[in-house]
Image (cartoon, rainbow, N blue to C red):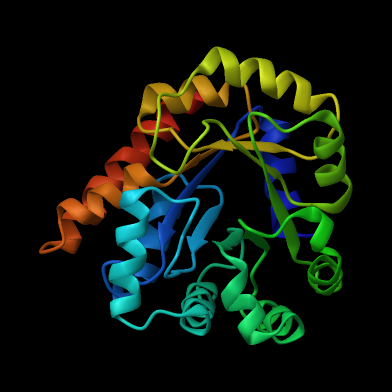
Amino acid sequence: MSRLKIRFDELAKTGRKALIPFITAGDPNPEFTVPMMHAMVEAGADVIELGVPFSDPMADGPVIQRASERALEHHTGLRKVLSLATEFRKTNQTTPVVLMGYLNPIEIMGYENFANAAQRAEIDGVLTVDLPPEEAEECVALLKARDIDQIFLLAPNSPVDRIKKMDAVGSGYLYYVSVKGVTGAGHLDTLDVERKLAEIKKHTRLPVGVGFGVKDADTAKTIASLADGVVVGSAFISKIEANLDDPEQAKAEIIELIRSMRQAMDS
């Protein structure tokens, strides 16, 4: 059984929802990433989404685009990200880690080579933004054989047949993109999210996490009342960007924000 299923099952038994922070591996430097991952867990994170830097992150807004640029300046490629995950696993064997990124680096490495490397790094899930379920058969099969979940994105305009397709092919959880646009963009319409989640829940057996647009504790609390998980990225990356000369201050501000979200979600 995957760590993701174990974690979501544990949370469901206690009536709690998953807090899923995202950071870009290697931003602002590779030495920051693993200590930040541990600090996020201590502050209340249930699952970590670890971004794989990419030169053309088309689903990401300016904040995460710049994070990728900073990470790439430190030569943080896919293999380096896997090595950081391996380092994290040396002292944490329970927190699920999901790689979030784009297909190009995986294709360059080769699907089977990637699946083997992800297994060695004890990765729990892979969310490939530009890999649709219709083209994911090979990758899904290779990951599934290694007990790694392939996670798919649902959009506000995803029809019922596509929801069913992603439920059939995917595992771990479904990631619902709550706004039309890129990460960090737009105003989160919680009523619209509530309506869409009610539809999604009719057609999936998987937990549903909501991301894009969650920026503070109040929003996290509202989304937690509707979904199984709350995904937060740009709000944390902004703390890093605002403190490039003082990474420890960035870490402190991220920890504070995670704690406030955790407290609000549990209240």
